[in-house]
Length: 120
Figure (cartoon, rainbow, N blue to C red):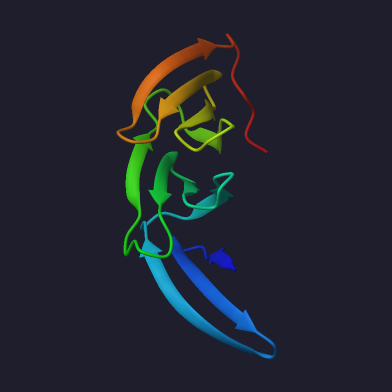
């Protein structure tokens, strides 16, 4: 079980029967609003309250890597484009929808909805 607290820390809880073990996986120093696993569960996207998107590769990784930083408004959400886990899509408060290459954070395509997306 992966869990995030307000402080931006990503926790892993290994639960077996009535016992559990907790491990701190990463600290992104910003509150995390969304955790999304890739379809094959090899990459975890972390979307922060400040609008950044990080990747975390469990169980080998010891830190989250900043992939994207909101340049035209905060990212509200991000998710993987399937099949596979090479690309993700994000939507920002500015109404911009973007497709990203996860390996290096390259923006491959963008579409402006010409309207701001309300934060709920």
